[in-house]
Structures are given as structure tokens and as C-alpha cells.
View (cartoon, rainbow, N blue to C red):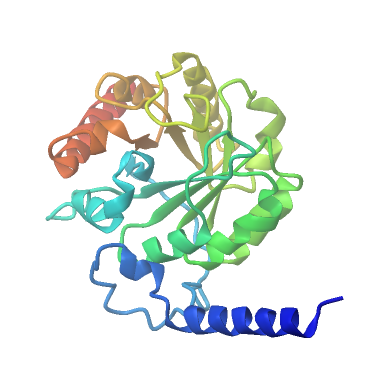
Length: 287
């Protein structure tokens, strides 16, 4: 049982915490002061989008999604702006890797930072949740306004129900599979999803070497899409650069996550445009 002096000290600490919570800066303000989007009237506090409705994921040309895992975390607002493109030719999506140090060994960022990123850019966010228990946590990212929320097939307990919940919150639903996870057990599940994210490296760290063997999975997924069995965007993540993107495009990939190839370049926006041109040319050759 607490003594009177202990109770007094506990009250003092509680009051001090409340005062700090009421005056601390929004984490968005720490993203080096980037101007917020002009019109956020449809969003309540916390970044959730009020009344946002699900719309199908459509891709008429290759999509390039720079991975913020390769960006400078101390300058995220600047790094997002760097891939925007002055004439609308920049990044199509921004890929955000959320890692929990359980499903994968690394730890990155979570929902509070994603909410701030959402306020700081008009490029759609593509959140890849490499986390345990996505059934519990993923919908919060959809409610924050994230464009596409991807969970891992290996971690989701009820992937069909989770896809429905993500769509009900207004987001696109993505399902990711690791390099050694077969595609076929998830064919029926994927009918409820908008994107299939095929990992071409082991998830958890950036800058790994491309695993070319996974392209057979993207070819099978592309055949299912082309024959009407699936209606989704085929996405690939891991080791995508100027040497590998054409292979992936020829194998039927629609969306390409690129980290070091973009943020390691002198001009990230130009790197995005170059990757897109390569993907378009390779896709035309496939057709």
C-alpha cells in the first residue's frame, strides 16, 4: 500500500505528464516544417479520413513506389518532396515499411509517424506492415488515410475478413508473401485483395540482393489477372534497380518498390522517371 508521501509523488508525476502531453509538439511538426496539405477538411484529428470510400485499385501503367526505408529518417518531409516531380512525373506511391521487431528482426516506425507522413504529402502512401497480429493493427492505418495497406499472409489469422475491414475503412487491401511462400494456397484469398506484394528479398532490411526466382510467382499471378481469375495490382519489393526492373516488368509486375535505386541517386525524382521508362519499355516488349 502506498504511503501518503508516495501517493503525493505519484499525483505530481501524473500532473507533470498531463502538462507535457498538452504542450508537446505534433510529430508532424518535427518533420522539418513541410507545409501541410491545404485542404484537410474531410479529416478529423489523428489523420483518419471521415467518410472515405473504397475504390478499386487501377493500374494502366507501371507504378513506381520509392521506399522510405532508404530515405533519411531525419528529413522525411524533404525526402518525400524529392520524389514528387515538378510536372507530375514523380512517384506514384510512397512505400512505408512498418516493422515491429517480432515478425521481422528490425524496428522502424509506427502509426503516429504514418499519420504525420499522411499530413505531409499528397503522394498516396503504400504501407507494408511487417508485423505480428495485423488483424488487430492494420485497420488503424486505413483509418489514418493510407491509400494501400499491405499485410503478410504468413501473419494474418483471418485474411479475408481483414481485407473486408481495410476496404470498409476506405483503403486498398494488399497481401504480401515472402520469397519462399507459395502463391497457390492464397489464390482464393487474393480475390478479396487489391494488391499482391511479392517479396524479392527476405523482409526486414533494405539493400538486399534481388531473388530472381520469385518472378515465376509474379508470372503466375499475371496469368491469373489476365485470364480474369484475379483483379489486382502485382507489386514487387526488394532489390529493384536499373538492372532488375526490366526482368520484373517482363514477368508481369505492375508496381515496383525501389529504395536505394531512388534515394541513393543524386536526383531521386529523375531516378523515378528513369525506372518508370525502363518498366514501360519492358512491359511493351512483353505484350
